Length: 250
Image (cartoon, rainbow, N blue to C red; front, side, top):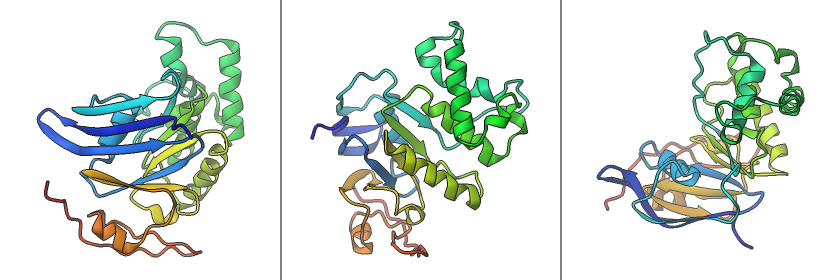
């Protein structure tokens, strides 16, 4: 099977500091990849390389399809000044800006698509509401609609439930499970224990990358990869075992 995206021997970082060392990764259609690792280990750097926002020092990023509309991106903290006079529909439509440009007006069909998405994800009644009127969970639904309005092939999520309550968190993962039927999902999380029923593959990132083609990983593996974050378990009640983080000597 040909991957939709491949990283080959990638080393990347900022100025003279290398954060990621010789990373290889293949992402396939309809995968749900969970990316885990300690703070400072390179998870965000990896996402920037995947998205084309950061040019690697070495290696190659191979896209099997044209990059236009390949990605939908939901960052950890979608920064909107809640006092800014923009309504929910306008926020969702801003997800089309890369293909529309800055000055081309949105069509009626664009607006209907935005409204259909808002209705589908329980925000139809808020389509004309100011973004500043929404709760954290409601805003995350709106930002998700913005991320997928361009019909991307890959949805990138960076700690998507950091600022929402536990009730919405469960609903959000159910939404992602449904979306995964039609697109590929790549998600960074510190707490993979709560979503282990949803991801299909796992990448442990701590300066280097160790890939697992299943959603099961042992405590021993985490330790050997110097990626000892919250231990992934299966069952009705996730259990977490916190270990000391150690950065490998390079």
